[in-house]
Image (tube, rainbow, N blue to C red; front, side, top):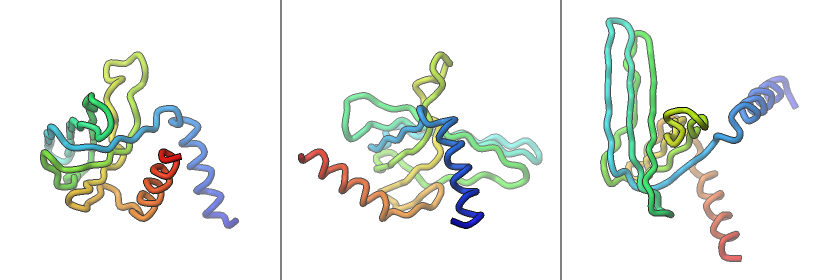
Length: 137
């Protein structure tokens, strides 16, 4: 194990130790989508609110993405109502006002085949196949 691997393991373990109980994901269809951009001379803020109707379940899930950037505008993937998405993020802190809102870390648009942060899609397919095998047993 090289220095780079040890470094990656250390950061991964510390992240899971801090946020492990809050990590969540959801997949479904976009019901509502709103982008709010604010520009202050050199400072740009992007706030995206998404409501997703999950494939499994009857409720709706509220999701929020916030990005602040100096000098350059933050970018977001193309998204419309009716698109199939997979959202990975953190649930809110219990006891706070936005406890039921998911803070988006990454979003995969399965309809347009775009990612906010590029990842390997073959790993997602393998995980889905394993999950369906477990359900069939």
